[in-house]
Image 1 (cartoon, helix red, strand yellow):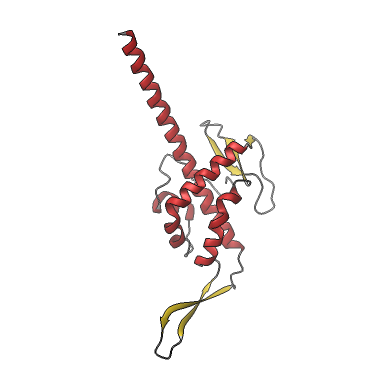
Image 2: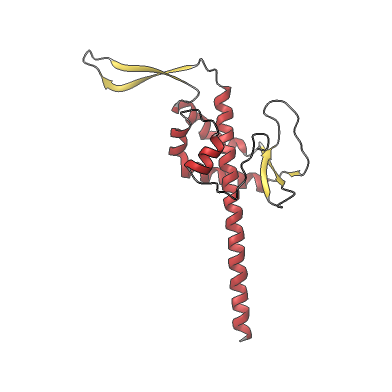
Length: 184
């Protein structure tokens, strides 16, 4: 009877650890999604709005000419592909972890400001393990949502993090925090 009780207790603690780990993984995936959205929006905003990409269609008109059209480069598939191809490698060195004082949960924050203003470096840590974990989560998100991502970012959106991470892909849920750009 004592052995049976020990087995049940062991199974209970294993299940509890799996649940805690899966909740932590879900939070990391949500954080990674928000970081991806923030980084893409940042890269899109850096492009000169007057930069145009001329693309040719595959169809030929009766005169033998291909149909050409001009689109803004910033949200073109060409630019978005360039941005996303190196995104996960690039964010690995741009983010550090901080521990939320209220929840005790670790999350990722920018290690330097995007606009040159100072940032709060209180309560942060950097480790290669955390950087590798962020890259892994980023790669997982990119693999899962790459097609949706390309379609989504062709257009500008009012609240892209909430819209993409919480609604379009459902990688974030109610219990996850929507981080402001300053937080990420």
